[in-house]
Amino acid sequence: MSQQVTVVGAGVIGLAAAWRAASAGYRVTVVDPEPGRGASWVAGGMLAPVTEAWPGEEAVLELGERSLRRWPEFARELAVDAFDPGLSEAGTVVAGRDAADADQIGILADYLGRIGRTVEVISGRRLRSLVPGLASALRSGIVVPGDLAVDNRQLLDALQAACKRNGVEFVRESAREIGPSAVVTDSGVYDADAVVLAAGARSALLHPQLREAVRPLKGEIVRMRPRRGCLPPPGVTVRAIVEGRPLYLVPRADGELIVGATQYESGYDESVKAGGVRELLDYAEQVYPSVSEYELTEITAGLRSASMDNLPLIGRLSDGVIVATGHYRNGLLHAPVTADAVLGILADEGLPDEIAAADPTRDRKREQV
Image 1 (cartoon, one colour):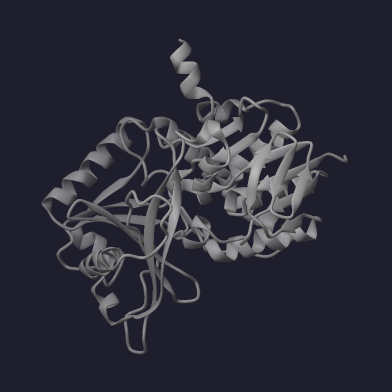
Image 2 (tube, one colour; image 1 turned 90 degrees about the horizontal axis):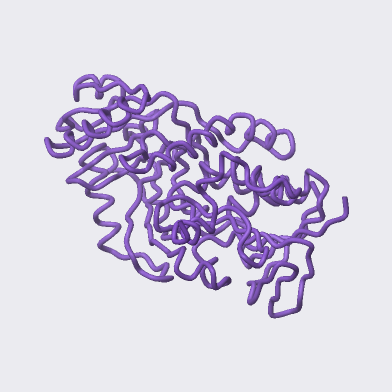
């Protein structure tokens, strides 16, 4: 196979697609000024379609669960081609701090029960017995053993290593213009038989069909580490609702703890706001009090790529460009199913049935009905 594929964007989606394509025999070039950075670098690493579920977003849940089932094999294959991406099967708990937060958890549990998903609702006391160190004020929770987590930065490094092992060429430049058969950068034109646009929120700046379909949503995270004598991070991912706002605490194998994430409209501004960080630290302390003694190791912001209905956009655009963007909070979760879909599209197999809801032309088709 001698077809040339150029992937624009080297976050988790672009790298996963490039790795799969190169493994299948395509000649692949990835264009990105900072491979392995962007929103994927800032992510918490949760692979949690069930705890992300909400009424009215059944298609999002279904797509997430399909991809979650592929994650163990995806991680094993990546470990063989590069190294272990840091997949954790420890599970997730969801906690509510006050009565209103507990009501939100109850709504989620009832909804999941109605659509056939099994979750266990537990008291605050039971929650604290499962996760020592949680605050005594927490009212209730849910246990979700099937959710996974991954070390996002270890994953990105592994994907880059796997790409290089399979001959992927990296061009550390920004794309200025794209078409179905070429990508233009400041230094020249990169011809291709197929172009895959996977530039996250910035995809909207590179294709007219995406200008109104994808928008950036800013999110800040805090990384911290326990100092000597501190209680270690929880052994599982802890998601919480505090004063109606979502929070997550994701432990890493090296002892670090990821706390996130804020979310708000801020255009393409990636600066960190003091108010956002203050909010994260305050809520984290209300859930896991020991974090107040932790050492801060990093404070970072990134831009999620959000669509209008929280489903990604995966498929061919009107001019033939293949798009894989708009994954919102689920970029890492959707990496396996998206990469497989891109590979199928490259082979002219069309959009797989399991990806049909993510058709990037879905809004136009609805208008025609």
